[in-house]
Structure formats: C-alpha cells, structure tokens
Image (cartoon, rainbow, N blue to C red; front, side, top):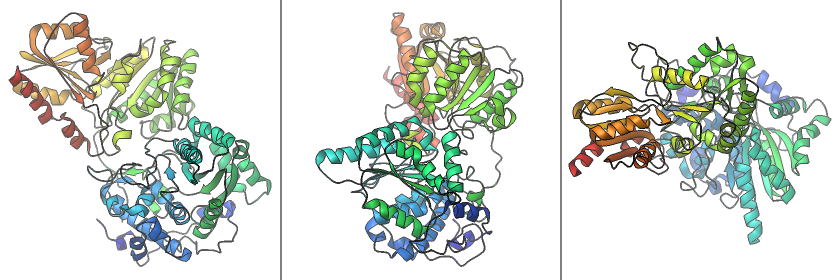
Amino acid sequence: MTDDASLDAGVQSHADAGMDCPSPHAESSPLRIVRARALRRPARRERPVATSLLERASSPRALQQLQPGQLPQLADEMRRYLVNAVAGCGGHLAASLGVVELAIALHYVFDSPRDPIIWDVGHQAYPHKILTGRREGITRIRRSGGLSGFMRREESAHDAFGAGHSSTSISAALGFALAAAARGETCRAIAVIGDGALTAGMAFEAMEHAGSAGADLLVVLNDNDMSISPNVGALHEHLLHSRALAGAAATLPVQAGALFKALGFAYSGPVDGHDMPALLAAVTAQRSQRGPRLLHVVTRKGQGYAPAENDPIKYHGVAPFDPSIGIGASAAPPTYTQIFGDWLCETAAVRRDIVAITPAMREGSGLVRFAAQYPERYIDVGIAEQHAVTLAAGMACGAMRPVVAIYSTFLQRAYDQLIHDVAIQRLPVMFAIDRAGLVGPDGATHNGAFDLSYLRCVPGLTLMAPSDAREMRAMLDAGLCLPGPSAVRYPREAAAPGDDEAPAVPLEIGRAVIRRQGRGLALLVFGTLLATASRIAEDLDATVIDMRFVAPLDARAVLDAAASHDLLVTIEENVVTGGAGSAVNECLLAHGLRAAILNLGLPPLFTEHGTRQELLRAAGLDETGIREAIERRLAAA
C-alpha cells in the first residue's frame, strides 16, 4: 500500500481546487460550479495532510464535536484515506469520492441512526461507513469476512436499509417516515439518490406517493451526470440545463424544481456539493423543515483524485492499483462479456434488424464498441429494466430483433414484463444475461443465483447455458433466429476458448452433447463448470454430458444416461432449488424412472461477498468440493 505522500500528484485538497470555505451565507451558484470545473487548475504537489481529524471523527457523535471550519480538512483527509484504502483492496471509488462532503454534512446535521440516512444502491457510501465506526474495515471491503460494498442492516445500525440495486431509497425512507407517524414518533427520514437512479420508475412512484401523503421526508438528489455510464434521458438533460444556467436567469431555478414541486415536494438548490459551508448551510436548513422536501446537490464523481475525475467510468469499480500512477492497461484473456460484445458487432454488420437495449450498463454488458459503431441501433434506457424489456417487445412487434443485454439480478426487476409482454406474445426477444452465477465481491445482491430457476418455468422461452466461448457464439446465433423468446446466460469470468478444431455446425435446439464417454457415473453439466467436471471425470472414468439447454431440456439424453449409468450427477452454478437439476429430476419422474441422482449447485442461501473461487469453494462447486460430494455419494451407495 502506498503512503499518503505518494498520492499528492493525484489527490486535491479544497485549497488546491480553489474552495477556501466562503461564508456559510454566501450564495451557491451552479454557474460558478460549472466555471470552476472548466477552469480547474492541475493538481500540485503538497505536504501530506495528517489524519488526526479523520481519526477523531469515528462516529456521528464524535464528528459533531468538530467545528464547522474543520470539516473541509476532514474531507481532504477522508479522500486521501479512501484512495489509499480502495487502491489496496479494490472497490467502488469514484462514486464515494464524489459524496465525501455530503456524507459529512448529513452526519454532522442529523442524528443517525435515529434519523435514518438511506443511501440508494450504497456503492457510494464508503464515507458513510467511515463516519459510522468502520474506517479500518474499508481496507478489507468486499473481501470474505470484510465489510460489504453496499448497505447491510446486519453490519451497522447506521445502515438503516439494505441496498445494492438502485432506486429503492425513496420508497424505503417513506416507509420509515410513515411508520414513525403511525407510532406517533418523530423521524427525519433521508433518502440519498443519484440522478442516474432517479431515472427508474420506482423512484417516481415513491415520490408521487410521498407528495400526496405529506410525509416528513427529505430526498437528497446527488446530481453528478452519471450512473456507471454517463446518464441519459430527458430528465438528465433537464437537470443539466437547469443547473448550468441557474445563475444566469432568475426563472431557471424555479424551472429546475417545477417537476418536483408538481409531485408535492418543496424544492431547494442546486447547491455545490463540494462547497462545505454552502452545503452545510443547505442541509442545516432542511433539519427544521417538515413535509416532503428535495435538496438538489451538484457533485462530481471522482472528486479530488485527478485520474478518477478524468475517467469516472474506469474508476467506478476498481481492482487493486497503485494510486500514485492510477490504473494501467491489463492484458487479460477475453471474458464472456467481451465475447458477447464482439459477436453483437459482427452480427450487426450483416443484420440491419438488430438493436441492442441496455438499462444503463453499457460498459458492464460489453456494449461500448457496439454503441460507437451502431449508435442508431444502440438504446440505453437508463436504470429502467421494466421499460427496457417492454420496449424490446414493442420493437419486436415492429419487425426488429432486439437483444436485451442485462445482468441476471437486474432481470429480476423486469420479470413481469418478460412474462406478460414478451413470453405470452411469443415475441423474438433475446436476453443476453451477464453476471450469471457467482460474481464475487459484490455479494448477495449481485450473485446471479436464481435465473435458471425463474426462467426455465416460462413457457416457450429457450434457455441456454454455454460451457465455453465457441458454444456461446453458437447459442447467440441460434437464439437470434428463433421465432420466440430466448436467453443465453453466462458469468463475468474469462471465457474458456472451446474446441477450435471442431467444425462449426449450427446448434440443434434442445440437444445435449456427450463430451466424454465413461462408465457407471454420468456428469450432466449446465454451463461453464464443464471444464471442472471434465477434470474430475478423467479420474473417475465418468461420462460427461454438456447439457447446453435448460429449456427445452434434452429428455432423450437424460433418459439414456439414466439407463446406462448407476449414478447421475447434475452440476450447475444456480441454486439447486428449482434449477437445472430439478428439471432433470422432473424428467425422470415424468417417465417413471427411479434413477440414483445427485444435484450439485448453489445452496438455497444468499451467498456473501468474497472472491469467486472462495465462493465456489464454500458452495462445494470447486473441483475438490464436487469430487468429494460424488465420492461421498458413491461410498454411501
């Protein structure tokens, strides 16, 4: 880990950025914010800041013992600590750097946990964790046994509501407010939500309810132009235009708040989220107010660390790096995400009816190249999974072939649209489902543990699980040609290349492939654990069947394996409850067969964060775990 002195070239202080603590009564002008950003001087070398204030601010009560004039220095110290700590262990960096002053101001003014501060998503809440007694834990955040990268009620009383996905904070905060009112108690509920998360319909559903209910609720809009990718949509354009020109025309601040006022909210702002005195004054003013309010705070993702300011997308979620030089280029093997992105570009070159749709996951879903090459056929709907799926259904009705690129856990949010708008109408929408199986450090909210279970029961949907890159391409080709809905699910990991010597042949829908013929024991594998199973099979002289399709299941392959082997073992990176192994069990029962069978998969639990290998080992799905489970079953026979 690099010491503070090595960070001087990248980390700026308030003084460096020209923010010398103006009077708390000075007017905060968004025009000044924009000009300050445009004219920002390059960071200069400075003496390292001592960590004494950061050490003293070990809890909200301790923070409140500081003088207001000390808070800018505390913010500088916290940024240095964040950059150093996250560079050492990896994690979400840019978003947390952007809310340092906001986290300090909220905890300085309000009384957490009595006043619940609910952070939307939670990946930006590292400063909140630091101020609530978890500073040392940041050095092991998202590691096995360490702090969660998101909000966890089990972790701290100050994490009032668990999070990991976006746009839930206003609903939750409203729930706190209404519950307190029902008990006859006072509760200052606060929701901190980004302009990216505000694009989701759920946020507006909550605001519409809160405005009509007259609840005592403060919504803090953290407006930084970003989700993970740059923000999109008419709301984004409205906020951008309004805050950039608010100081130039007296009518524009009213215009900026008109939407929120129409929903029943008292609007304040915009205020510079990195001007501590101005921000502190704005937050303090909210403490004595009642009813639904919205405070519009303008921040910069990556604030204070030059590499993150210049490229907030790269520094959104980082692996360990040297903070003195920033993140360098890496020569990693291609991932399944990259395989998908390359396939999509190649296919779009010969098929003009392809359109790619993503709910704000351009980088994560491998669509950067496609967006650049085919901007007219690339649609980012913002964080709006339900809309993305129904939009795809409408485009399919309009003779296009939509491909929805989406994470496994994010598709959960659009399950009704998948059934009601796509499957019932038998529309040719293809779902490219990334982050299937265990994702590692992001933990329970992001592990794609349930998609085989919740998709295989949808009538008419073809569900495929490739074992390698070559097979994945064949499945994508096949899905694009089907007359109804299809899904290809794959992990975020490096892709196994496949057998390049095998001839390229069209994929036969619903047909498995025997990869190795053995005796007595048959391993029926769904997805990328095939390579692990194949190594075990060599030692046990087992048959290996690459099942490929979860729906339709290859019943003939299952029945033939049951008839010619003493034990069937199904292997999948999905919960065993209702998953691919359950499909095999149902097939055997439907045909009246009583075969010996062992279902291996993820346990029916919410798997915590850690490395992918640690999680596979804990689930018994690494090579050792699978082998031992089989040997125990054989010994008991």
